[in-house]
Image (cartoon, rainbow, N blue to C red; front, side, top):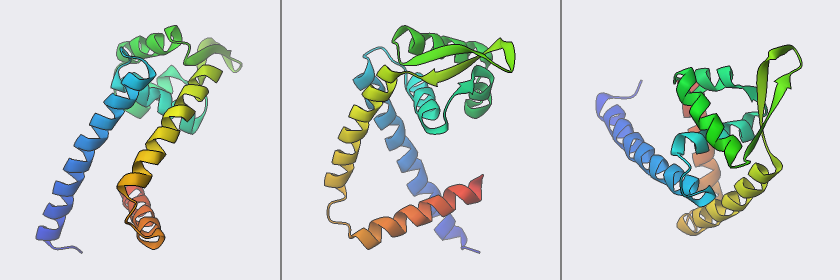
Length: 144
């Protein structure tokens, strides 16, 4: 078990990371559209990563109420970033999926993001970077 000082240092570094991630998400959302909210952008990323979902899945995933999810989904639909189709298992429900336009625009942003990361982490060795990825993955798994 880690000592209290190490855990405090981890907590501090994670809080810095969270603030940076929030700032980056807001910047990326504006890159997609100047009025796109960071929450809507995060939902778009979730659909990109996990595939088509019901809005109720996004409610659970983001721990926000149905009304808030509905507003974000509507914004994504209006920008043609997602598509909505009836759920074949329950025609009352809708399935949300990232659209071709959404895929295209996220791919462009991903290219920019990887380039920026490559520049900022250019002095890291491949071993350092892959070790960090393994550690971060282990950390995320432990917190699930």
